[in-house]
Amino acid sequence: MKEKMTYVAIDADDVGSIVGDAVLSNNSSKLSEISGKINAGVQIFSKWAEYNGGSVISSGSDEAVFQVPLSSIEELEELKNTYQQKTGFSVSIGIGEKISDAAKALIYAKVNGKNQIVDYRDWE
Image (cartoon, rainbow, N blue to C red):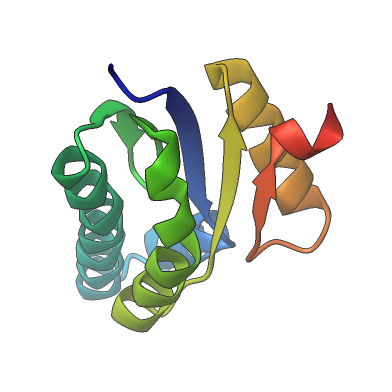
């Protein structure tokens, strides 16, 4: 029997303003450095999703959506910490049975302090 799948949405915290500062100051080396960190951070989650039999649904800059087996979400706290260690940025994470639920949980995480994991199923 195939394991139940769920969605995970991620978004790095406060990266947009850091990128904006680098762009506005014409600092190409800083922009390149930040971009490399963003790509490395998303790869942490992408590899995790694929390793666990999931997939990358959407990925752009510092945000992404994955479909993964429900059992693999137990690893998210460790991934969140690894992401921060590797990139220097914190990350907010939303979980939901539908993409829209994961997105709502992610928005809640961002609005209510960032750097946290919110599971939409806890609201039901």
